[in-house]
Length: 353
Image 1: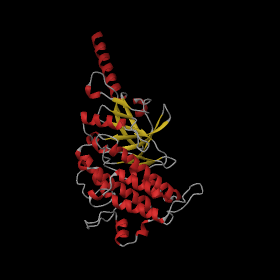
Image 2: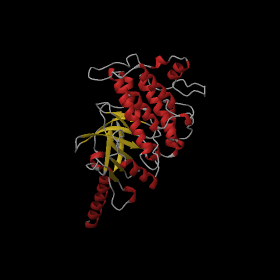
Image 3: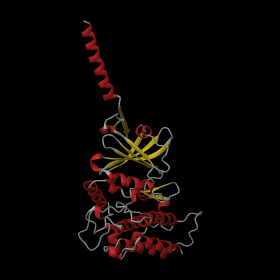
Image 4: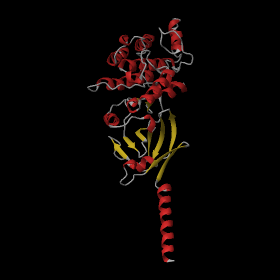
C-alpha cells in the first residue's frame, strides 16, 4: 500500500511539474490582438537560449521589460510587425520591430549586421537601442519612438504644416544628411535598400529620422525580394533594380528623388496603374505632369504658405523649380545620370543661398 501511495504521489508530482513548465514558463507579448509566444531561458538546453544585446541609450533595457511591454501594432509586412510599446519599468515609449524567424538570415553574418546597425549614430538616423533573440528564433529590434509618426502620414494628412516650404525644405535636408552618413560615413557605403516616406519618422519639430536602413541585410533572399516588390508597388523602385541584393547608392538616390517629389506635390507616389512605357519611370501623376509640360500641377497650391514666425523671404518660385529639377535628376532612368548624395546636399543647400 505504501509503495502504491508513493508511486501515485510521484506520478501526480511529475504531472504538476510538466504542467508548470508548459503553462507558466511561457511569456506572451500581446500587442494589438497579435500574440507572439516567447519562451523563457532554459537551463542546459541550447534550443532554449535567449539573448539581449544593448547599445548606446539602450543600456536600461531588460528582457522582461521588452517582453512584458503592452503595445499596439502600427505596421505589418510579410517579414515582420512593428509595435508601439510602453516599457513599464522606465515608462518610455519604444518601437519594437518583430522579425519572423522564417524570414531572417542566420549565423555570424546576421550578428555582424546587428553590431554594425547598433553602432550607427546620426541626428537624422533612427538608432538601434537593443536587439533581442528568442529561443524559437524570434528577433526583436528596439528603436526610439517618434510621436509625429512617419512622413507618409504627414503628407497624406494634408495639414498646413505639410505645405509650408520651410518645413518641406528642412525635412529634405535632414533626409539627405542621414543618407549621406550611410553612403559616405564608413569605409564601405551602407545601402538603405528600402527608402520611402513610410520609413522617414518625424519628431514634434518635424525633424526627420531615416529608419529601416540595411534591414534587408537581416532578411533571407525570399523576404528581401518581397520587400523590393512592395517598394516597387509603392513607386520607389529604381528601374534597373531587379533583385534586392543589387541595391546600390544609385537606387537609394532614385528613391530619395521620389520622396522629394512627394513633399513638393503633397501626393503619394503609389502607382496604381503602372505604365508600359519603359522609357519613363515615375508614378503616374508625376509622369503625366512632366510629359504634358504642366510642371505647376506638381506643386501644391499652398506651397508658399508662410508662418509669421518663419523667415521665408528667400523663398521664390525659382527655388521651388530648382528643387523640382533636383528631384527629377535623382529619378533619372539612367543610374549614371543621377547625382550622388553629396551633390544632392550641395544643390539643396544652394537653393537657400
